[in-house]
Length: 66
Image (cartoon, rainbow, N blue to C red; front, side, top):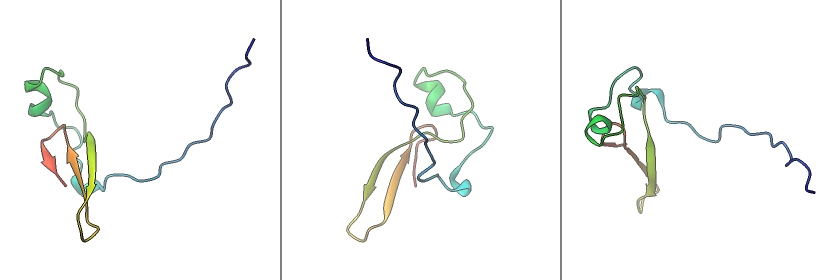
């Protein structure tokens, strides 16, 4: 009836700088929230800009604001 959806080419638009990543560490925040013991280097969310155009993001996995 409808063909297969088209294949889209994707690319990374932006990435969290390495200095903010915590590769190979367990996140106590994720464990306490009942999310398991999956090792992650970051889980970012909530991008927001201030009046000076500085970008802030929340790292949910490690409870930080970068």
